[in-house]
Length: 316
Image 1 (cartoon, helix red, strand yellow):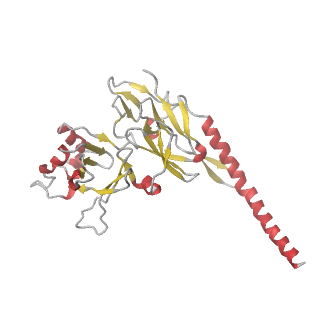
Image 2 (spheres, helix red, strand yellow; image 1 turned 30 degrees about the vertical axis):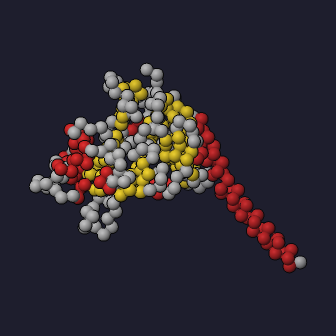
Image 3 (tube, one colour; image 1 turned 180 degrees about the vertical axis):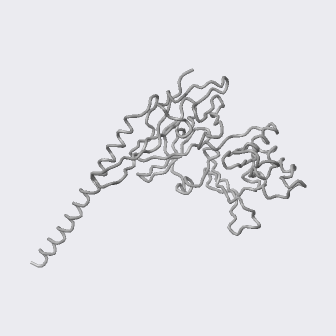
C-alpha cells in the first residue's frame, strides 16, 4: 500500500511537470517553428535559402568566397560550409574562433593580439596566425613597437617586410595590415603585423586609409579581409569584377550599380551582405532578426530569426 501511494505521488509529480512543459514550452516551440518556417518561405526576390531560419544561423564571411563560417545557434553546430559543394567541415575550438578569429583565407585565421606595448603591459598578448590545415599557431611580429625613426614614426627600413611578402592583408576597421612571406611557417620574420597609428600622419586617415595608401605606394597587391561591413569602404569581389557598397553592388569596370535596393527587396547591402560567392554569381545575405510582441503568453518579446540566403546577381 505504501509503495502504491509513493507511485501515485511520483506519477502526480511527473504529470505536473508534463503539464508545465505543455503549457509553457510547447506553445513557444510551436510559435517558433511557425515563424521560422514562414521566414524560409517569404524570402526577398532573387534569393534562395542556404541555411534555414529554424536553425537560428549567424555567419561570418571568408575572403575568396569558397567557404562560409556558420554558427547554428539552435543546434549548437559550428562549421565551415563549402559554398561549392555544400560540404560542412567541423574545426577545433570552433566557438573561440567564431568569436575571436578573422579569416585571411579558407585555411588561415588571424587571432588578434592586444595592441599595447609588449614591454609595458602585463596582459600583452601577441598576434597569431592559425593554420587550419595543420592546426598550428604561428606568432606574428608586431612592427608597431620596433625602434622608430627620428620623427617618432615607423622607420622606413621596416617596409622591406612588406616588399618581400607573398600576401598582404588589410583590415580597415581595425587599422591593421598583415604581411606573410612564402615561408612564413618556418621564418619568424616572415609574418608581421602593423598598426596604422605607427605611420606618419596615420591618425589623420580613417579606417585603414593610411595603410592602404602605403601599400599602394609600393605598387603591391593586397587583399581586404574586413568584409563585415560596407559602411566605410568598397569590398571587391574575389576577382575584382564587382564592388559592394552600402547602397548596392557596382560594376568595377563601369562604376554602374547592378544590384540596388529594389533588386534586394528594399535592403541596404551594408547590413545585409555576409559573403561573396566563390564564382561571383551570387552573394550570401541575411536580414536582421525581428521581434514579435506576445501578450497571450504574458507580455514578452519573441525573437524571429532570419535564414541565410543566396542572392543571385543579375546576368549582365
